[in-house]
Length: 157
Length: 287
Image (cartoon, rainbow over all chains, first blue to last red; front, top):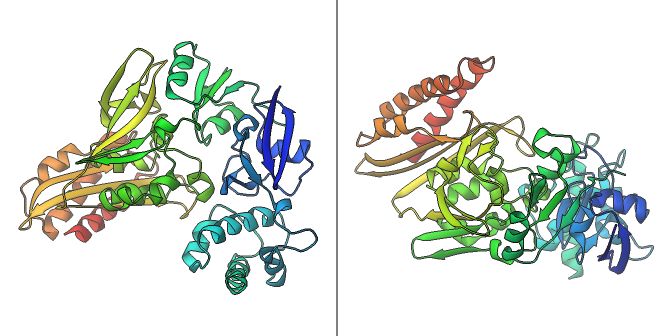
């Protein structure tokens, strides 16, 4: 066991953990943050996407010991209280959520994109979410939701 | 809850890494992006059997830089593919490497996976290998007691085998900058565009004057058992007229070379004509 400290959804946390467990398991089982999903478990489907120091990564490929001192953002951390993040609202409005299993990862990949490129092209959106597999929507609704969010966020700024 | 059941150390300097590797036994592995190591241990891969210590090299500043001095570019072994794709030095001077790096995995993978991690296990499908080979990349390898340079081609000794010895770590990739007269390209064929393991990859770098080939470098990735330069083709093309006829001849010959290297496989009926067409198109676009 080792003690790790990190920032989880903007709060400092400290926990005793086995160093070799996946961050995916740490989040789901020690913090009860079950929005982060396990799909393939080998870095191909993106259902377990989190933001690590602002970058989208597969949490099934990162070990607990590796996030000591890091900043972690999960799907539970992007709403402001009861107010959904504009990406979450637009995913609902555009029918970008069907079974919902890919949605947390999809939203977080889009979140990382918009932080870096506020006004992305269709190609940039596709590149950002290429590592998030969705078997329901056919992706068009998701891309529409990201584009609409980009427009809204630009207006707020 | 899945537990890899091993110790993990995250040293903050290269000196500490070298000391840990010197103290090691065969059950110590280096951990960078984790895209091979974590999945390998989890799936019980033979290469990672009995691993009991992982040395995490994500916090080593010495291996995270991309630098250019005069006509040499040095890329730290721990540079991620996202770092490579965002680097102006790489975009300007090593565009084939940038193109290869941008085809790897997904954003999530490129944010973690590192350039040295791509070739240290010598998987034939490593996408940056053909690009690094046409750029004549040289590796710097360190251990507690030694530091040496070796060409990537020499380092890659056989499928899933390299010259890396216990206690050693690749620290840098050193690439001589090709002069402005070189042009090149890279092509990857996978089953889909993203998150795809390469079926076929090719890189070409060529310098020609008045339509005569002065230097040509052609390298494979996933078509041959390990990434390799096609020296017979390169010699054949040298000093020849860079016309459509030569492109056609080279494309035919690459089929023969690949067949000689791999033998006739169930996939040959598909792969050979495709690789020939890939090389033909790459060459024609570079004329």
